Amino acid sequence: MTEMTVLESAAVAQPQAVPVRRSVYRLGAAATLLGVAAGLVVTVVLELGVQDPFGDVPTLTYLKGILAARNVWLVVHLVFAFVVLLKLVGLLSLGDILEQGPARPLARAAGGLAICGAGMFLVTMVHDGYLHEYLATSWEQANAATRPEWVPIFAEGVRDTLGTELGSLAAMTGLAPIGYGLAILLGSRLPRWVGWLGVLGGIGAVFTTGYLWMTGNTNLGYGVLYPVFATLLPLIWYVAIAVLLWRRGGDRTVNVPRHAPAANRAAY
Image: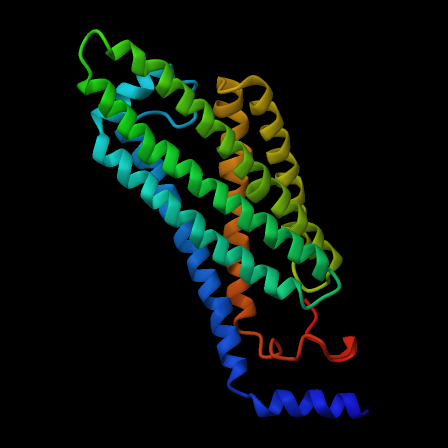
């Protein structure tokens, strides 16, 4: 009884925390939707302005494509870097909701994986969007005798970028959604189909990672598996997360202390 009194007093003493926490969830929803929208836009720009992002592109074609739209290439990858950070805000906001229930360890593990995946994706954007532009420019400016020497260097950069991209795919699009999905399935107030989408889509992304790791940049891997499990399903999942966060932002019970007895804690 004493514990209940202390917790209730703490909640009453900080009434301003209620709208603040709800606002944070709304902010997470807005960041997620902005990330999804910006990602779609720059993907279309990349497709129309530079090259097919889901194709097995020869090294010289890749290199010349960058040179033909150098500024577009730089801007697109800079935007992609911000996109992943916006999506990370949404994932961590979702994790805060899930940490209020019995799946707290899963939610924390998924959040850690999401942070690791976002970090590797930022490295991927630095390599692909900044370093590759420099290598392509160096190839263009080299004389006829030394120009061929830049091609294997560029190819090595592409291979290195693929490695960090696959690490990001495994963590942020594969294992993190699996963790979040399982956490949702252990709860009772978030739609189970969102949990299953996270789990099944995450498993598909892990499989895609393994396939591309073993085969490299192939048309099947980047032309079929990657668009489905690293683009389409995550897009649907992020939109669903944004809707859940927005609705959670309207829930007036979100401020019950996290360590309150289970009967009085805001279940998820």
